[in-house]
Length: 324
Ligand SMILES: [Zn+2]
Picture 1 (cartoon, rainbow, N blue to C red):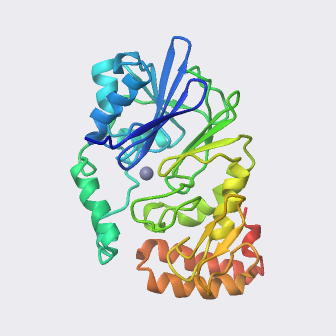
Picture 2: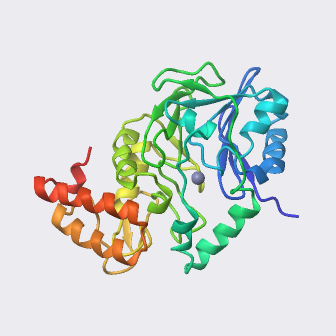
Picture 3: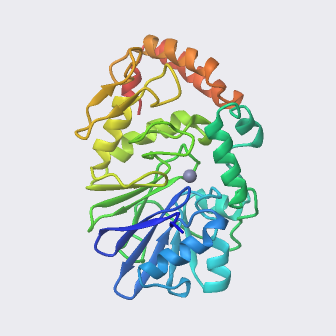
């Protein structure tokens, strides 16, 4: 039987695990062991097998750090906490999301609006089979502030990069020059035909425009390796990953579907109408964005926010690329 996960030690004591549908990271530093994210509830076997491959048992996991509290990232958090004594840590507003006093997750109706796409149906079937609709609330979550190193293996520094969720958190591992970016940007996803740095489909973001703005802060973080919540590891700085996302973004179809980055990060257009956001004026972007919004089945709530933002930017005459 082939394994549906794989583990790579991207730096000493930093093991990146590409799970069946989402990723997690095992941090080992002397006697200290921590996880960043832990997949769907149904990934428990893969999670424990990956820990074993790194020489660890669930009882060894001192902390679980949460990038964001979606079911594909905290699926085993409560089980680790309850049965293995793991402390669950989240930054700022993501703590209440992990406790499920609030919920920021794509709705069934939003997914159904995309169900004509066979990739969405395959993804949805997997999400349901992996326990994505189950209760993943964590009974006790330690809330930490952004910017201060956490007393855990490799001393991760949490940075709030909201948009995907209000408390979406990126973890910087300064000594190893690794940045764990969660779903702030990804390098692949089950419903994307594109490989390489990209944003998730807008329906997955609580606030797609804020997620876009957070890229600016991500690109300022130092690092040589970027570990996403979906897709393979990226051997580049956060700035290069963000540049690749922006360089390959097209708004004439779903994001990133028409072009892909070459290894040196340059854009390779694969179809004629590709247009880069980075060099477009607000009016040009507004035009293609409206076209895309109407054809891509973007949920009403998100569409309203985007159109409002377009109107503001057109009114102020700002360039899209100068978003901050
Ligand atoms: Zn995810």
